[in-house]
Image (cartoon, rainbow, N blue to C red; front, side, top):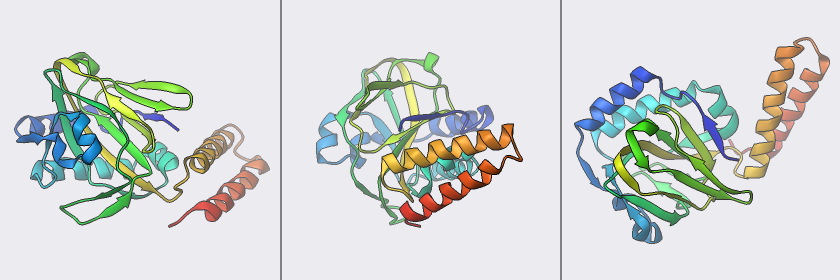
Amino acid sequence: MILQIPDVLNAEQVAHARRLLNEATWVDGRVTAGMQAARAKDNMQLAEDDPVAGRIGDQILAALQRNPLFVSAALPLKVFPPLFNRYRGGESFGHHVDNAIRQSPVTGARIRTDLSATLFLADPEEYEGGELMIEDTYGVHVAKLPAGHMVLYPSTSLHHVKPVTSGARIASFFWIQSMVRDDGQRSLLFDLDTAIQRLTLDLPDHPAAVQLTAVYHNLLRRWADA
């Protein structure tokens, strides 16, 4: 499942993050790439122990906890501390798959990467190119979203970032270990949860809402590791 989540950060939060990032020190993005990805990666990012990354990352994590669409879709167990990257001057990231396991050198936290997320911090009008291209069995999906919006996709997906030919593409990226590791099961639960919410809104007293909610939780109980 590939899902766009709007307004994870509001305009004020994005502006605050951008002010901090404009004053930060950027390093070679290959410091967090695996052996294969390092050959394809050409960008800059904040060091994982940069205090700016920690400050904005905490804001992002707090926003995710309050976002019902993210919680429903990801069923998060652990979220990797958000990282930050910048592409400009023709920089890109070739075809790759994210590492299955990530460990933070700052916190020591280790997660299985079930889902990958890119939270855009620059508007599409600020740069040319820089599209995130995500491949699945249905083809190639393009993500180039407004600042504050996020795309969530399976970490098993082959993906790449096209060259940024002008301006600067600034984003946060991170990974999620879900309570439900299987993407197909997680997608079914998300569809069921969405249907229950619509039914509850349209027909709040309909007995099917209770029955479907029971089905949802019994499936979650069967599939989840919490």
